Amino acid sequence: MNEPQRTAPLSVALGALATVRGAIISAAAIAFSGVGGGERFWLAIGVFAAAAVIGTGVAFVKWRRLTYTIGDQDIRVESGLLSRAARSVPYERIQDVSLEASLLPRIFGLVAVKFETGAGGGEDLALQYLTAAQGEALRRLVRERRDEEQAAPGAAHPGAATAPEEEGDVLYALTPGRLFTFGLFEFSLAVFAVLGGLLQYADNVTSIDIWDVDLWRRWLAEEGAAVANIGPYAQVLGAVAGLIGLAVIGVVTGVARTVLRDWGFILTRSARGFRRQRGLLTRTDVVMPAHRVQGLVIGTGLVRYRFGWQSLSFVSLAQDAEGESHVVAPFAKADEIARIAAAAGFRLPDASTTWHRASKRQRTDKILLDAAIFVIPTIAMAIFLPFGLFLIPIGLAVLGAGVNLYAWEFRRHAIDATYVYASHGFLSPTQAIATRLKLHSVEIWQGPLAQRRGYATVNLGLAGGQFAMHGVPIDEARSLRAAVLETIAATDYSRLDAPGAEGEDQALSAAQSGLSANFLAT
Image (tube, rainbow, N blue to C red; front, side, top):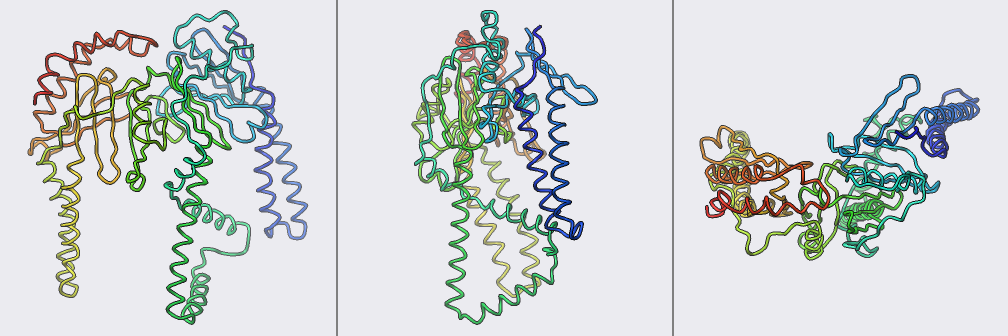
């Protein structure tokens, strides 16, 4: 067992700066409020100084009390000021090691090292902060220990001289031009949430009560009178200008968010696996071993789908900070997605894929259940409102029935000797692909209505994700379950996560016979 080590000493400076930033906000709130009367500015300075000194001291003590130990079987982190906590993560349980650096750590040349085990879909352990060289060396060591490779003594020790990370072949990259185009499709009005937060802050530090209804009523009355005097044409122009301004704000916000998140996005493939780097202010560097990719999700948006743009995500136990699967191509064409999928060992569905649609009985039930929502409004409007208005909910029910009929064409699934596929959505379709070898359970679920009507939902167990086929006729669902169980019984799961394991073809040959053939013939 190696000796306990501490994170980079500059971590203390980052902790102090974080405290100073919070102290500035507190001091500003005091300075612009009525607290302390005429002495409030001196009070604000005193609060700022005290918070900065205390925060810096706490950051130093936390740094001294946090140690990590690199063992032969696991990584152990001990922390705590008054009470101590020790957390240990075995190498074999680590799904991913990512490096993340926001703006200030990047200035100091530091990164946060995050270990993910897939428990609860989030990170289990994090070290803040190591130098960039230490972080890269630690990631390489964990990868080698996890893959049970024998490294030369001391060669992979963090901080020691190590070979640079293998770059690999570039599979996908977001150029500035494409990134800007991507941002145009990421329309967002999140700026108004920020404005709401600023208004709340103003309410706390000023005498203005933003929740005073009378204040807003008086303002609206004054503005309403002014608008009424400018004439109908000016009012229409003002409304159009307001809508255009709203659209501009949404587009600018979407572009800004996209640039901040995906600037410099690059995906490479090497013998180690896939490496994704992205981010302008906060730069993340994630490595995903190819053998841990459980499935693919191909998604799109309502508008971008019409222009042929899609996104590709890898399903695995490790996930992004947002709790979603790792996005490996956020804005790509079909040929780019096919190339990345092939590099991950997946085949996309083609003309030879035999698709099965959801049960027509499920389609009918869904139409009737959705239409039932409009029954009570129709009766109420027919009784209490002028004649003819009850036709509105009836029209909505008919429209909903048409939408369900059209959407049914896109709810489909398929299975062959190697893969399972599921697709849904007609305005912005989503397609999921999984390897049968990576499935570890299969469930047939039926509600009361489905039991009577003879269809079911087939839920397939997939590490790190969900895979469901809805409205499958019950006989077909049972055949599908039997085919998947045959693959599960023939698979040696102790070998699946072993890098370079090539014994999968033997399991596949068993999956290609028997009930698989029977299902494909149904």
